[in-house]
Image 1 (cartoon, rainbow, N blue to C red):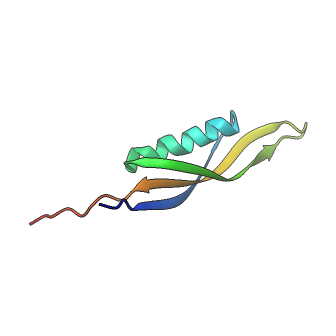
Image 2 (tube, one colour):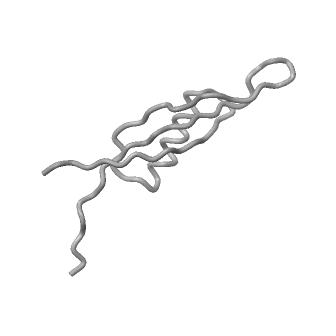
Length: 74
């Protein structure tokens, strides 16, 4: 049987790092989405304070997961 996947785009942020922002997005997605198989970084950015230091790290990810087979509710 063939496997079908679906990809959705999600965004999130962290005050700590880009890596943490990625982990935050994936962990939050995993609460409601089963069988996540892959992620791709689409965009990374953030905010900068008056001294030029990064203060917030923002990411946009494509999250891919397996589409479940249909369920017979007969």
